[in-house]
Image 1 (tube, each protein chain N blue to C red):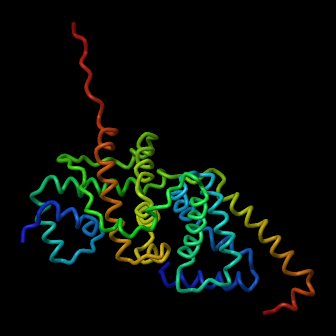
Image 2 (image 1 turned 90 degrees about the vertical axis):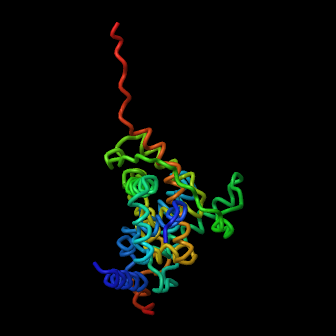
Image 3 (image 1 turned 180 degrees about the vertical axis):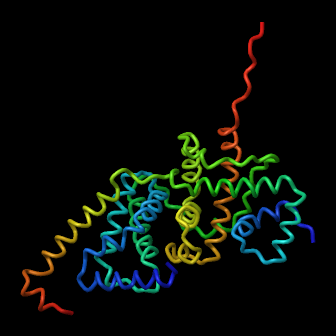
Length: 210
Length: 95
């Protein structure tokens, strides 16, 4: 389906729901269940909290659907609701350090120097089947500072466009690009050496000949 | 103009997204053709992006969708019972 056709279908669904066919809300949210959960998880880092907040965001979305303006995509709109809920939750948590989420200064940081490897050998996607490799990828993403992680999750893992990501996060498209670049470089720096070590063929063992 | 490695690193993201101008892209490509280190950085970045985008890296909790729709159903039921008090009132609140 083209973007325009997709948007038309979404608008028609929303109009029907607002007009009283509330059951259709199930269909409206189905394509966005995962992205909302993922974005929230990138903030709260706890799957039970992420699930609660995702549910709450979809319910709030339903209750205020009449106020939804068609300029944004529904997914961007509900992601914004979810992020606000996640931020509120984190502010309540005592351990949360009230910095960095929207610190504009972060984007003036010097460039991230990548990990230098002369002989990168492609890591096959089957490697993801290994728990150890999945854990390395998850940990590296979790370690990204929030502002980069959220952009990375939306752009890279959920394949949202630059414009959609900018709309969902309330930042400019240019800033999305800057943050995505930094996130990618940080992950390369973190993951290239560890992934290579984790997926290297086992060292040949010396047999005790004598 | 010859690019230095550290300048090439700034372009890696846009190179991967194919959003560089033709001129800049050609400059970066020329550098990559003879620089093993930058080629390895580009390849490893591309490879890592493929791996992190894999659906198997982050899985939804088992039953997530079912619980979400069940909660929504409960909400829709209360919404309905709160909004109208029977069929006759429903037809009255047309808009």
